[in-house]
Length: 332
Image (cartoon, rainbow, N blue to C red; front, top):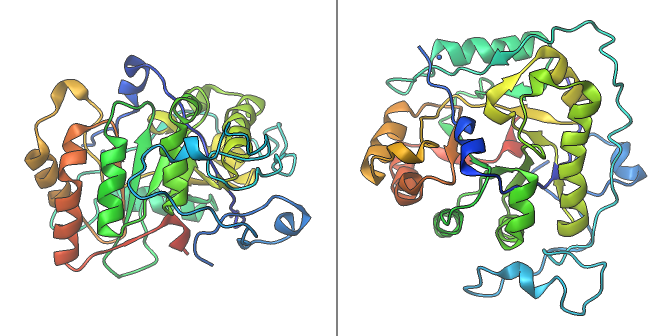
């Protein structure tokens, strides 16, 4: 199981039609720190601090990025104010499936949890990852505490991410945002804000493909293209990846683990990605709270107005039930 993790950034802005399929499939299914990629980082399994801390966000500024890029401060500056990170070759992983692992497509299912109990499908999936030595998570089964991991998928931007970030800031909750390269390129101020406010920006690929259909070299390019941009323009990188559409194979798990990535799935979600079927903030609140359970990796989509409207109440209600919110970097 891969232990080394690095933090990467990616922001894509793809068309709505392309990412409508990014929604979760309904069933019947050492603390976070920024790291360098120099020799010292390559030789350790733990995170190491960057010498330069990101600057404090100007009060009330949602366009933080513009303060630090293209303003005569030099080309070595980033949107975040952090120094650019050296590009990574991820240890030059093998592009050959030497273990003969299956390339058959697997589509992640999670089961609808009830009565604060994770569905058996989620338990089975996590057992599969653990038993086969894959560094992947859909459910935290290593704790009996009432903990939640809040994650968002971001394929493109339609105006709700800033409101979500406002709520997370006001509630003191950190989350992970899995982004695509186009989104990162088109909305640098949002990505910069995620980083400077302490969230994880995870890799969701460059073009949002079905990874079960890719060769290993294509997988490498999808992740590296995202990570290169994140390092160069934001001085940030994180070793967390989410499969587009939840489609993967055992071969892809092995390849991505060999690059140092933990693959992050989910045990709680709903069809919030369907913008033609939004039912209001109250419906979103009731759906999420009915499925909440200890150890849940929660998947929400940042394009949903329902999620943006309900998030504060979800956080408050979960805390009233005794839950605490943790980051993916807290996973053992």
